[in-house]
Amino acid sequence: MSRKSDKTLTRLAPMLLAWFDTSARTLPWRSPRGVRRDPYCVWLSEIMLQQTTVPHAAPYFTTFTARWPTVEALAAAKDEDVMQAWAGLGYYARARNLLKCAREVAARGGFPGTEGELLALPGIGPYTAGAIAALAFGERAPAVDGNAERVFARLLAMTGDWAAEKKRIGGIARDLVPADRPGDFAEALMDLGATVCTPKSPNCPVCPLTELCLARAEGAPERYPVKPVKIARPVRFGSAYVLRRMGQVWLVRRPPSGLLGGMLALPGPDWSETRAPSHPPLAADWTEAGEVRHVFTHFSLQLTVWTAQVRDADLPDGFWAAEDQAAGLPTVFSKAAALGGISVPRKR
Image (cartoon, rainbow, N blue to C red; front, side, top):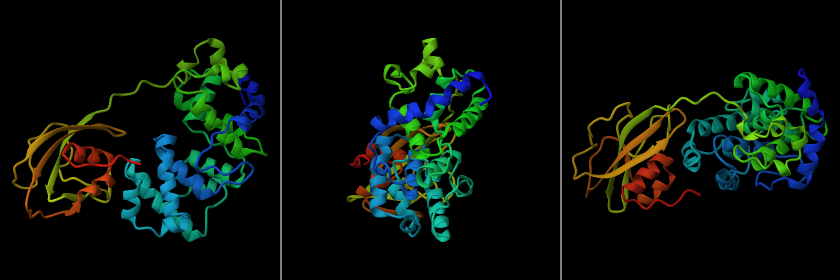
């Protein structure tokens, strides 16, 4: 640790672990205390938790592990089955990488046990590699997610360039990982950031690290981390067509690559930066049902929904599916289907 203020953190690990021993969350992917974590469960849960919350990811994890209890079982699954089971978690490139990684791990006979080897697997970045290495294999590796970054940014009242500060946090965390409890340390940081050192209204009075926290001493911990101002997302426009007949809806499959690649969808043109006239996939008595708004990572989408009933139809692509199959559509199309009059059960 190069800075004077960093040296105060040498007391952090024992203080944090003492708190964790009495305050650890019970989560479906965690093993009982003292039991080494299953690398498959660690990996699967961490991939699911990217860009979503614990309450949202937990039922998906339970469903996946009941259906595919091992990495070998997942590796043998059909792509379309996994993609459909993933629907609602978003960021479908992660689901494609999930399968690619599972098949590579199964082919090699199991997960490698070091941070460096794990980083070479598809879809595994520094945080996930550190989490698997520490939690499943006991390696003295850091697992620095957004929660941990927020904790350290407040502890040290970091005001520098955020990209540089994140690198600094990674180095500090690596130095602090205790050799005897690397997995507990990783999970303790996650829990502290998720339940106490939250983005808004951090609960400083119950924080085990209050006496170490420079942001707390300043009196305004919620102002950290100091990140660059976000650039407004561009807006794209499109149409979705809900074509129905006798309890069925017409579905298409999106191209294998790109956004929502390989997923089932409602028919409609490519999304564009300007509104375009409606061009339905066939002549019918189309009615405008309203508009769905959905936010992706890099843009916001405004999707006009049209609906029509037919007795029969002759379309070049796609197929008729039972209306309840709309529950397995990606969220944006599930919203559109519901707006078009289809009863879509809520995601798990």
